[in-house]
Image 1 (spheres, each protein chain N blue to C red):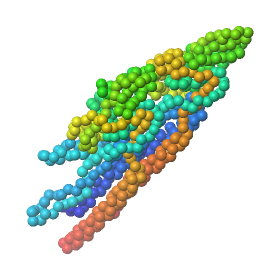
Image 2: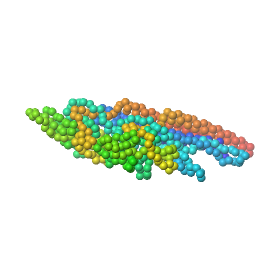
Image 3: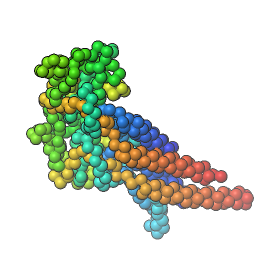
Image 4: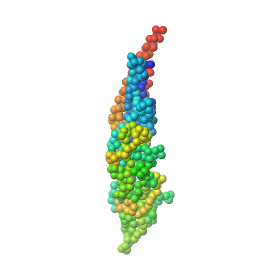
Length: 243
Length: 263
């Protein structure tokens, strides 16, 4: 087996995956509450031939994607149903498939006056779904307390995870789903900002730089594949020539 | 497959195109009375899970993170922002501003009720109060031809002063409608909105009561479009469009390099 070729192939495939993840990050640069996807490479060893001949293959193969949960910048919108979260908390959402979590605070009211996401899934408060009394403007406190005309009636349920990167995966629609690695904990340190939205945490400049870098790495690997192929071709031609 | 990156970047370009379309409409309506700006909102599309987080990597260890590749972005909503617009004095007695939430009710020629924030009303040839496009204010109000002054109170009471009379005479009452979810109303154009399943049922009431806004006579509500903000959004949309197109050219270059491997 030609390990060099295989190693380069793995490296090229990994960089294709990276470009796909970068494309998704860039496409979502203006998606509220979006968190960047970062691919991590991992070297891995091939089977050992023998103890004396400890040859191991090291390849830039892909291990996985990690979500970068760093805080996105916060823009003021002035819309009372927009909430941004400063800190590591998530809003809990009730979907037909079970609980989900989100950082996208562009909430709405449905026709029954219930607080919902843009997909119509219910936002969860301390006592389940939240129905907003209709006779006044909704005010949301820093701790998530919901009040109308100064009367508090519920509080947004804010949860956090010790290690969100392993506890959550993305589901699309700005929602995160539990992996089962960790149970959600109650969050007390985050601050809810009403009338604001959290932007994505994509930095388009660093994303572009990473993309160019990734492309150049891909190119180098392609060159090495070409060299090895030429080398291989010459060897084959030489061997056939001898016969 | 770099093809996926191509398709993902294409979704990115498409949402930015829609973003610019929406900004263009807001800017075009920057001087439209009662216009409420709309904001386009995005979401990420579905993800392909190539390795699941929490899956077993061998008998004793689990993968701490999985491998998920996203498929791009989509526009999910154009959210109309019912923030109060700028209030301008006009001194025209049939110009009204709603201070707070609520909509004027307008009866269209089809007989259906539509809702509007544009309070620039006029009189038709029979003295009825109508919009600039001739739809009747609901409930209907007729101003007597000989009236010398029209007064509309904060609670929507319409009274007129007739020649030779010292007491103003009540001729009608403006009523306003509020909705559980005004953002769910459908825009009909011509400054009008229509009730939908998402907006909920209107509650009609007297201005100033139960969360309904008050009426101010002689003023008009301008649009709530902030031109500077829209321009900043437009620049950022254009730049993101450009960045997405760079992803497409990068993906294309990578495909080209694959083709050079066997040359």
